[in-house]
Image (cartoon, rainbow, N blue to C red):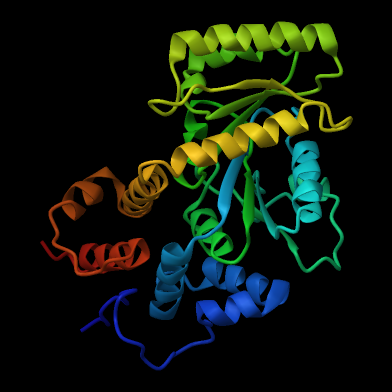
Length: 325
């Protein structure tokens, strides 16, 4: 018989592999985190890794900020500015740059990571690139697992995704606050209204605010698009902020908006409810990608013992692979 999938709520058992526990990862610094993320990509479904990821899902302490927008809009410049400000405030930061995949190797092309300007000796900053692989929305199952691990170790996790479009909604699978970046004079606002992307963000940033008049015009166009689309969350009004990460203009207003959205999420258990919904979607997406829509329909009929999302995913994979009905 195949081994039973690990449950995050099962009693401790001897570890059968090189997968560490969460306390070891958290105490081991950047090298331990890097090793754990490598295992995310190579040991998927292994019981000890399932247990580690479910423990991380329960322990998630970080604020997760998702930055999305078209190439060249200034996401990496904004990320650099946010990392500097977070470190100045004494917060630890992890950045996950989800890059396009190489057609030849399947690995990340490292375009976003190459633009990150961080001190390699700063133990409070961790930067990692991961490939989008075959997921149009930009987040592979490995990327989701990486965010879960990082948010259990760091104070702030910034996820920067490739491109933008209707399929880019994957960022909402992991982010507490979704930030859509728009560049002035690019014609993006009309395209966003067509694609329905304006339903996605919690905060909208018009970058390169030093282009004063065109930035104001872009902000006005975006506000008009928002009035047609509505906000991402009931009870939350999406702010539109003009920002220049290069000069610092608008950064205080942006951080205030992020803090306000965090306070909104912490009212009435919204954050817990949002993360629980995200976990359900992780499991569904992982099953759909591996087994297709027919497999997902079959999976919904199973009674599951696993409590954590990764235990549920592993249990469903075992059942579907074994053709249990």
